[in-house]
Length: 293
Ligand SMILES: [Zn+2]
Image (tube, rainbow, N blue to C red; front, side):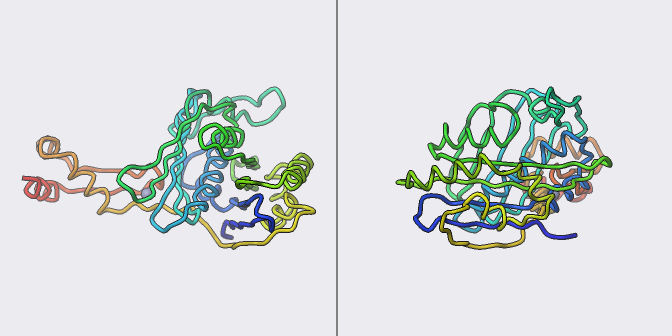
């Protein structure tokens, strides 16, 4: 399978930066892990794309960003986590949720997501993560991310996301871009970017037509001088491990561990992000209890 690709660029006058990504491979991987309906493929796929691009804006290794939509739609909570490069993982509470197409005949992503808060949590390796919150404005994800940056972080941004889903529920094409204005952005440059964005096709159409992230950037920055910063492969990557789940079990404390032992069954955990199962046998629980004492 081809890798997903993420590219970043900056206008030469320092007015705006852009991240563009072809996340088809990531959304396909998500579809293989989770049993996603057509509309939930689009919903989770858009959220994964947004999280990946937001992750690529982190400055240092070991930092991560969590994007969580807590809408009241049938899809339930959608949660995506990206590392500092844009390697991402995610899940939805109800991956098989489905709704009829909306009034415009499109997948009703706004409907499956619903209304409620959305959270952005950045773990920058400090004592406390940075947490931002904004209301979900449409549930279409891109609009919500754009609104989040404007209202919660005072960063004028434009986010565009798209996922095309095949009849057999596999992802046909997915991608997006995220433009952010930098302080003291030049008005002419901003005007040119706005005119370009108003004219270009949806991100999923561009990816489906074979445009690379670089091509997308050239469209958004058409007529503007810019420099490519970097381009690299990203993927659907889970960071779970047996050790991590072991530590989580330990952190339940003595009382809970005693209860588990008493129940007499091995403890089976399952990672919501990748579906991997980790089984802890009773002697291991016993050992945990000993070291918790
Ligand atoms: Zn996992």
